Image 1 (tube, rainbow, N blue to C red):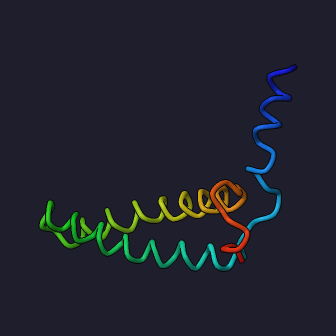
Image 2 (image 1 turned 120 degrees about the horizontal axis):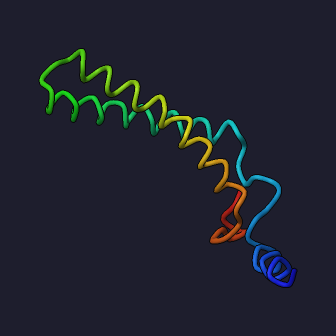
Length: 90
């Protein structure tokens, strides 16, 4: 039981219950980043395949999965206060 108490002590001040940013901001960041990554992925896929249809398929499918993953990751990190200084947070 002592190990769980120690973990709780370490986590105090690192993990917060309230996010630092609005959900809409995280969503806007996610979509903007993903739009850029779709273009990059399609360009690289086209360079390797030489086929526009395959490049579009690769770029869109890969990035649809990554968008959800990134958004979830961003929301998780938004609840961690480690490395965030109060004067720099919103």
